[in-house]
Length: 388
Ligand SMILES: *[C@@H]1O[C@H](CO)[C@@H](O)[C@H](O)[C@H]1NC(C)=O
Ligand SMILES: *[C@@H]1O[C@H](CO)[C@@H](O)[C@H](O)[C@H]1NC(C)=O
Ligand SMILES: *[C@@H]1O[C@H](CO)[C@@H](O)[C@H](O)[C@H]1NC(C)=O
Ligand SMILES: *[C@@H]1O[C@H](CO)[C@@H](O)[C@H](O)[C@H]1NC(C)=O
Image (cartoon, rainbow, N blue to C red; front, side, top):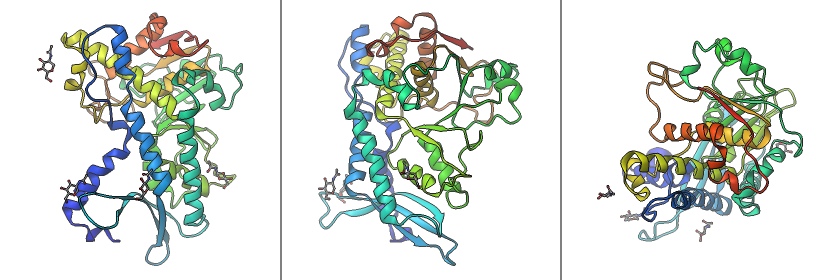
């Protein structure tokens, strides 16, 4: 069906419904009252967003369809991912809702049925991961996720955030000295090497980055053009919307030995752990700043839009695989740009950066106080140094 056949009201409705497919915008409602660290932990552990993303993934797994149409002149194909949705007050069969639309090459891409089957296999892995492990087991599993043995930890790691405070820092050479350097959301290094370094071992992105990149490049670049640090540098991605797993399937399907698409998808349990940590620190700040009960936290933070920033998951991942972790490019300063590599003026309201900085401060100075990580059996937070 062509888009222009949808009346505007229906399009608006589709948009509202599509919000349920975005992990980054859901948090629990109505946490109970009163204070205390125990209560904060309890409230922060409620992860409605995590449940939501799993149910979205389950709906896609059960009912998604993939269709493709050649463009005029057969230059490429338009590929649609759809799921049925049913409004019980409207009689008749469910409507098909497009969740994703991509341009892909005309030839050399698997059939829609084969793509759907690979997409469902990916959803299945994603869904099973949550059942396999309690959140507490996350950190013990991380080395395996990165393809290393338990003992094969990296001696020194640098996680490089994208804060404008890096500009003029001259920290590039220090960053590059680390054994394992993680960069975030494909921030470019060209032109900034003196301040941010040039070495990249792992490119960490949220799935919105891959989706934007696949939308742009799936049709023209084998394996998609999503590796600004070089084809050999693997990408780790956390999934904001389960539909983005299709982008990964497509990029993988068009990859060639010369143009590979090395990707590691981080599991929902790591996501859930990070969501808890971020919410805990955000609530703690809120209670300290306002004197209001933690249950009033939603007055400050719109629960539909609150989410931790990508950097936080990269930092937690580094805690699981490194003997020493250094953080660069987190934090802000008067007059510093938000990102070193963009002209974005304002930080996003959906993150509570100050709360995340509290977390990093605790990691450095009193790791025993960090909640949730201490639930992982045998896990010890490695020494962390924050270069503000
Ligand atoms: C799949 O679609 C059927 C029929 O519309 C519906 O009953 C079922 O609940 C859907 N499954 C999921 C997991 O959403
Ligand atoms: C279902 O349809 C009714 C009537 O068109 C509308 O008022 C209602 O908001 C719809 N509900 C959802 C969840 O879309
Ligand atoms: C990636 O593509 C290769 C070959 O095309 C296939 O064997 C493999 O299963 C794919 N991996 C995923 C995760 O889809
Ligand atoms: C908590 O929020 C409610 C409104 O949502 C407000 O009426 C109440 O005063 C707040 N509590 C405190 C202690 O400020």
